[in-house]
Length: 429
Image 1 (cartoon, rainbow, N blue to C red):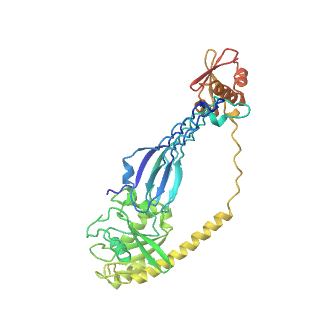
Image 2 (cartoon, rainbow, N blue to C red):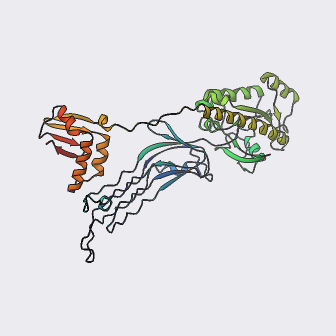
Image 3 (spheres, rainbow, N blue to C red):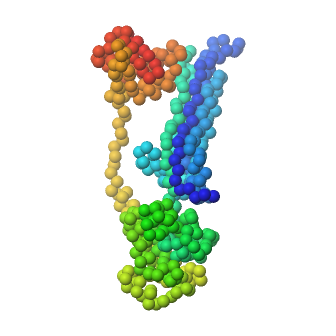
């Protein structure tokens, strides 16, 4: 399967079903009464994390996703069937952004985690709902609400505890294979690994996920090789293993290999260089020159450099011990930072209810013709079909509640002028 870690989707939740006007007509119920049922709710679109998938490939060509509409209400006060929800399965580590504002909406980090990205519209009420002691035979009914729409960008960044970085042929895939049950494709040429390879390892009381991050070469941060595509996959790692091959065939200069990768990390993001990085020299079975190792440590001024052979599984226990020690330290620091953040959290007052009178906008668009704009009236002009006397009265009450006529008259409107409210027209009395 092709590896895809970014895609864009246009989503539309289901509309709510419409309520209906219906009357009871049975011989043994001579008084009858309202019998119209409510519409069913529209289906929502829900994101769900799935640990069984590791790419956005299945979503790449979908582009537009629609949830099912709710059914209209029925006679005998029967509620319409609810529209089915649409579930979008994504890999763990998927970040979802609003495509227009680029604002982060949610990170999917756990298997089974769900997030309702678009809510389905609520079903409209039928006339049975509006029956009261004041109105025993209402002709009131509503259309269902429209389902939410939005365009989103999905970006996959792998969730791994330990990211393994380094040049191609450093032995990253071999190391992941040696530490876990992962079985990556391994060969002695560049870019054998075309996707991040994940492997799970149990260390004492921790189960850690190791990730082989492919494609880092000089210029990776600028898009050369495969590094530009995969550098973002180490942003969520708690720590990094910088793996460097001791083989003369892979590296003529160990220090240069070390420096180049570090420069690419800093060019891509300063956050990466601030991560705890454990430097590991690999392929000691091919070249374990003490002189080269000592020179490298002297130039880098690193005190804790491990020498291993992933192929021969030499010194891997020592490596795991060091990884465990660093991981626990980082985990403790992160928890303290979270605790401090929680203690510093300010109490934010709830937003006041929106003043729809301030939202009202009236402008003259022609001789004795006025355009009325308001989110409040936009909603109700769709919600209340003006096909019954009761509904016309109800909509007029909505207009009266925000003083539409009075404000129009203050602006110069007179009796007989036309108010255009979206798809509706009213004459001022």
